[in-house]
Length: 246
Image (cartoon, rainbow, N blue to C red; front, side, top):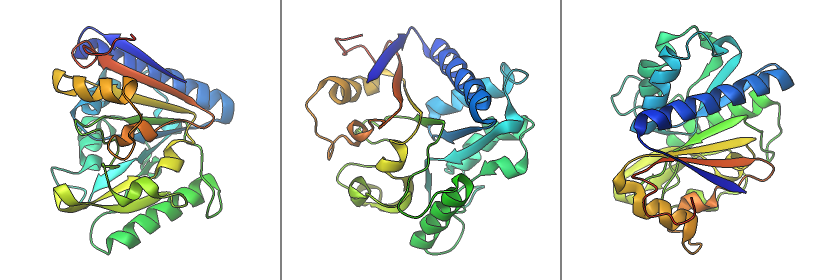
């Protein structure tokens, strides 16, 4: 079951998301002494990361949080388009996170399939699951593209149909590039999934995803339905302006 919460502006959206992340972190640590957090790319999560690093710096359990990436571009970690670099600059470089808690996708060099396979192996080793099994992340953070994509699950791409792998190298024709992305079965195993959606340009697609007909091939975000978890949508007034059920 999903819920939509709407906020008047970006600042209140970031604040609500930060409180949600903190609550999930403290609850996870009470349950199993660590918090596994899958990060998203994009400008909206960047605002959240900056807030966590500043206003939440003293409250957040950095030492017991493990950071993973839901998707990445095939670029070096110091490249301006790197999701890792964005999270590093906005948050991770500003707080006391043990280096061994930062589990980035090693995208520099190598064959894309090998890179995806290596990150899948990293996830299996960390969570102690066998090949063909899916680990349970405590919190998955996602954004929503104007074309309905989330993570790097783009419309009409092969990754939408993957049922066994944890991460794949997904060829995106319209971008003429490879994107690394966690797969739908892995994302849907999470305990909590939080979408952050901001801006008027996202209003049509948010309405389509939440209130339109199911068309997951064209709107991959509709594939995100936790198996045994919670799904929360956080949006500002502009993004939610076309949604009727708020």
